Structures are given as structure tokens and as C-alpha cells.
Length: 212
Image: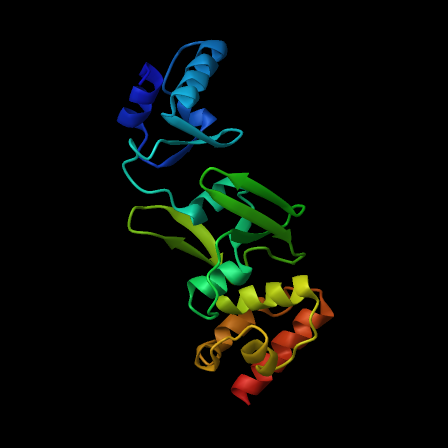
């Protein structure tokens, strides 16, 4: 273990950290610091998630890496959504291995040592409308769509023409009881947020069926 890894262990509490945080731990030149980082990676003490983003070896981590938080750190203007959210809430039976998020930037993906992260572009008036700020017991923070917003994002990306609960229960195998847990406020928060006619038709039709 080199001195940089020791400094990380002593001073950085979060399991995932940035180059900027590493640079604050030493007064050495960028070249010398880079050499220490490179050596720590070669020794297996430090893991590079992507450029500028790192975690320690599981042997040294004080807390577990939360993949949802990593997703947020890779692209800050994003939120976890789509099948990842629906599976996480138990709305669909399938387990989801990769983390899927929505962003205002271009569609992209990252295959990293701590997981596979996919980012889908969904145009919206307000990116974080219908999005919750969540935090786990270890203090890891991330942004996540409500189940209704995850469904709206799904309708946009898959270009499906849905306007009722039937395709949700038959195609996605969403539990119907879960749909009745969607509140009026959930619909109100997304009102006018999407320019897509299919998404708005879906939201209007679903709201009418659930609350008429």
C-alpha cells in the first residue's frame, strides 16, 4: 500500500471519490500524484471506475459501493429510471443487472469494474420533475424516478402507444395493485413535462382509468 492509498483511507469517508478529492490529499506535483495513482491501480489497491472516478479495493473499503450513487457520479445530470426503478420497487418480476438512467445529454453507456451503466436521453421541460432524492443507511445519495415517471420514460423510449393499465400488466407484467398506489400528485408533477404525444396520451389515459 503506497502513501496515497493510506491518505485516502485516513481522509476520504465515501466509497467512491474523484481526482479532485485525491489531489487535495497531497502537495506533490500532478506527475508524481499520477505515478502514485498508477502504482496503486497496478497493485490492485485502487480501482478506476472511469476517468476521474475511483474506489478502493473491497479489502480497504469502509462502506459498500452503491451502484445507484455511482450512476449519479458518472453523469450528474441524470436519474435512475426505467426497468431499474420498476424492478427495484418490485413492480416487474424480472431482475435487472445493469443500471439504467435518464439524462438530458446524449445516450451513452459505461462498462466499469463496479457495474454496467446505461444512459438514455429523454427530452423534458424539467429533467428532475417526478424525481426523488434518496439516501441509503451509509449516506450514499442518488436521484431516482418515481415509478410513474419510470413508466413515462419507458413509453417514450420504446415508442409504445399505451393509454391504459392493460399493456402494463400484460406486456411489462406490472402488478395491478402497484398501479393503484400512484397518487394524483405523481401525475400532477409530470403534467406538461413531456412534449411527446404518446407519453402525454399514456399519462392522461392512465390517470383517467385510475381516478375516474
